[in-house]
Amino acid sequence: MPNKDVTEYLIAKVKSEGLLEGYKRARKPKPPQQSDDTFLKAGYRILEETGAMPREIELKKAIAEEFEKLSEAKTDEEKEEHFRRLAELQMVLGVEQDARRKFYTE
Image (cartoon, rainbow, N blue to C red; front, side, top):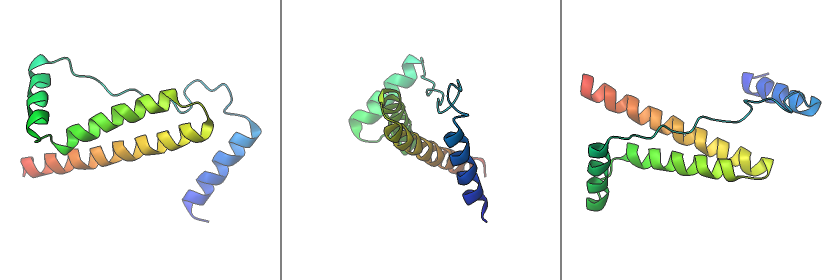
């Protein structure tokens, strides 16, 4: 049995037994940190107006929007979908940041 199947089985089992009910940290990701640097914000505004916004910034905005949608979701299905989308966006952002760091350090 692949690890993914075992994990999914254990999660379903725990949910069916109700062991996650009332768990304080269940499915509550941290909100993205906001920068207070006015020069940085001005630079991003200029980049956005000229249409030269880096993909990392677009991903950060999408993550912030998805986090808002997650906090507003009412049903478990909606929360699950937004949580998956949020995780996917964070993964893509991490890959792009690693690629940029590797490119500029070598």
